[in-house]
Image (cartoon, rainbow, N blue to C red):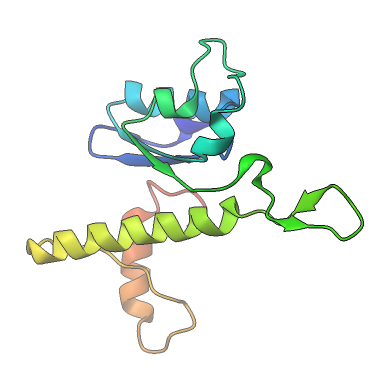
Length: 148
């Protein structure tokens, strides 16, 4: 799947897996690193510590990433008890993962801006008066981001 994208040494790939054990996220991280990209893993340290890898190498996602961010999700990724049941539900990794990615991106943009480096920031298509700027951004990034 990642062969469809021109990943290289100037890129950073976020790989998200709450358990950190499944083969596909580990393969994605390994592929990106082979291409020279940096890999940021978002995973649950609590969950990962309680399971074994499903990847042929025996490694977990945290083992193959350049930077690991603990999403603080509990084992099983469920935070709400169900009345009259021993089961739980309510994923925390989805919302914490989205927050983490956005926080890292905002920090990176602020850092670059502070160094005088301009960054394309795609704003809501529902904003008025920015159609030309958004069209220009889409034209620049379409070769790298399918479906844009």
